Length: 340
Ligand code: GLA
Image 1: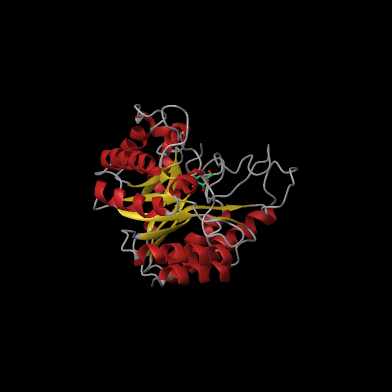
Image 2: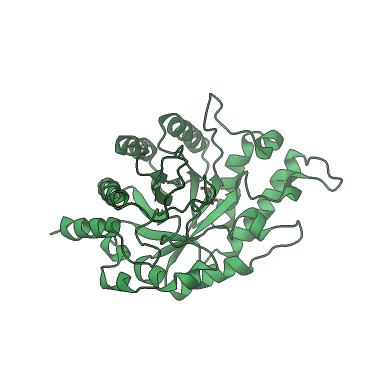
């Protein structure tokens, strides 16, 4: 890998007075991207290793080896760590929803298992993790329904959401607790997320922040939509974080597969987009406490192959060789000037 990323100012320094700069990592990238991560980022999130299915594959078996390695990396480099995620409809072990005869569990048993899980996982990382995505993606994308139908809602109704926050708060009263979701800047979904979080606050549920996943692309969402979402969420008096930022080169519906390199025009467009996004985020630095990318450099992104199989994507500020891209240069040039 190229080490020109060291000849530019560190991203985390440029925004040191504003918010943490994070990256999602996994056991492979803490090796392959170690120097880049250590130089530019001051926070990490486990990409998959703390999800239910990863740490709790069987009722009596917790598997923490991979998660522990990521925590050790954060410690070694003096980085903050976000926990991701405690309650979700995906990547959650089937046993959780089944009783010992293979039938469906009762609501009571499900909540009891959830409590035990949350206490074990949050308790284990009490000294290392400062913030948790407690509940991930429970809002329905379309239609009138507030919540997405899932095994959680089928068995427990809506109550599991408040309970998850209560249990996480019991397990670590210091931890900052977040509700996290995608399409967070879409007006319909934004208003539903707002409604959910407002009702949690009215019930006195311990929730401290909203995570805007921010899986964005060159075209969507618009800056106005992002701004409106930030304003609306901030009006609840909570802190906000971008938790999974990436800027895909393709519209979600775009199925093209012909590119093996980004076109120069795309890199320029991405640079403009990133600069505009960071300018906007800086306007809200009082409410935004963290900006985490869902990866660190273009050699590894979950967008390779998603949603179009076999297609490469280039969503980050650093290229496949870890060299700063035009998008990095634009953010850095502007950030360096913005304070006299
Ligand atoms: C969601 C989840 C993340 C991750 C991404 C795709 O945003 O919150 O954990 O699975 O999807 O990589």
